[in-house]
Length: 313
Figure 1 (cartoon, rainbow, N blue to C red):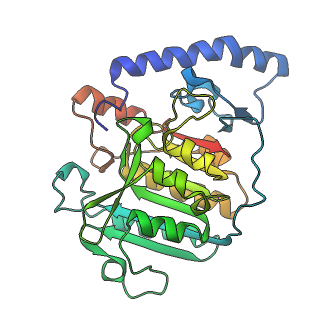
Figure 2: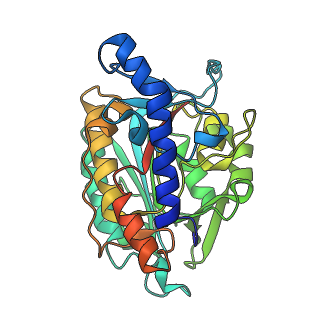
Figure 3: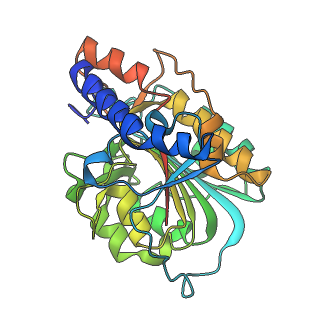
């Protein structure tokens, strides 16, 4: 949200911190090994959780973890090898026009549907303003004929191995972070961290592509990292792929499709992210309210490639 995009000065500080970690840790490790590692399990302390792992490890596949203790997933619900793709686009009639995805949300959902179909069956849950379900996406059995409300997302997510969410995020504080879903009237329906924490079966054992503003951010607590990604992991999600800051819709689409394509051929999400070169258009809508200043918008554009992280549950 506003102020969340690293502006020029913050960008320089994060870059300096990444370079400090490279000099102090990464380069000595690479000299000891004689080459970069083939992959890294990255468990950053609170001060490094806003630093993009790809800025530290460059082209090495990196998966983040908030804890090195393996979770107990023996009670996680069994899941079909299927995918749920969710779109919550406030549309042109929203009181805040900055949230309108300008007709591009459905195109992104359709691109993600095609990518997910390479893995198996796909279920669609979509809203654009007051239009939702089959009125929006056509008379198809794959379409859940309900709005993309918080309740319906939780109910449907429990049925699938992979869940893709395309929506705005609201992260004024990590304790109150939320995905902005939509009710039947097209009003914002917040799916916040408290609801996620109370509905662990919805995401336990699932891989979640959280294509939502700042969905990958976590707090400074080692016990309860918080934020959307941290809450999903605490609820048992197997993996969460999400951006650390607001991203362009077309960048999110590229990442989501690439990760789904990779999973269809057996590649892990973090391996896909390490090889991916994201090209975002300046005119693509932003997931999250656009940065208010020119300097912040330029910083946002430069940081699209580094924004996405993979957290392991």
